[in-house]
Image 1 (cartoon, each protein chain N blue to C red):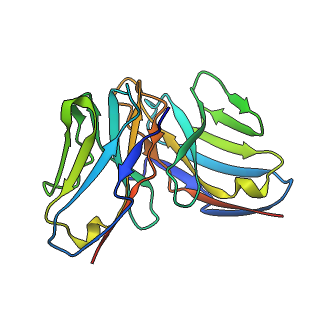
Image 2: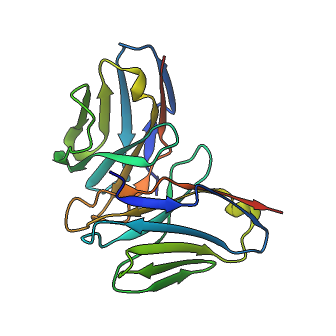
Length: 113
Length: 112
């Protein structure tokens, strides 16, 4: 049972463009939604996270948009750079429980110069 | 501050052998998690420690997997005997609370 569905599986964007990755979840008890960035040979690194009481969070070029009624959230990377080329994972957890993360399948982003 | 470290970075073993993976969390982090990513699929939760106690083992695949956390510090994950389907990347993560997990670089396990 896939509780968090992520799309697209891969994404190619030109330098300076906007990268958008979408995730949908099923469990309405989830209350924490992080995005992780992973470079080859490295572990996932926490990029940005959001709680369901806000609809948007921005940190630099990275923005999370959250739609609680639709049970969807997305990552927007503005002015995408070649250095942003990585695999991105969305995740969800219920922090009142163990806080274990339920991950999406991952999106491989390639930003072309 | 040192991050989460894992050892070894890569292990190749034959089916039926035993392998032990080690994770050293960030100092002071009581929460320690193990995850696994198999064949390019999603990263899946295995188990969660709070200090030396297992809080949630719901993701452990079967009884061939044994996790321990000595004195609430480092943790080991033993696979005995290993099967082909155990191949994958095993990640360890630690955190102060139930959010904000920091991941290690992972151990790539290949069972042949």
